[in-house]
Length: 93
Image 1 (cartoon, rainbow, N blue to C red):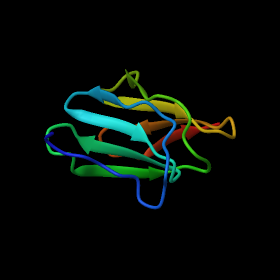
Image 2: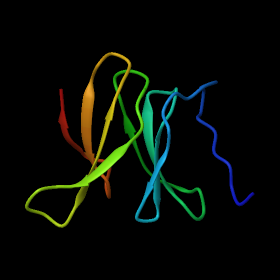
Image 3: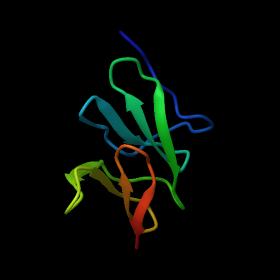
């Protein structure tokens, strides 16, 4: 095993991880999405959600840019898009 990661203050996680471009994206039972360095397990950024993340992460290019977005949903039917590099919110509905 190279590294392990635990969600602070949470005993479970419902979201499957996704690895793209050397980053592992995963939502935890602690109402946060994490971008981890896939080689080291170090946290690159976190994003706080309004409810526990329930879905796997999907990654897609942001139209008209050279950047990517991470898309996911929470248990309260919230849908989010955040910048894959920075974790900044793009939109939420």
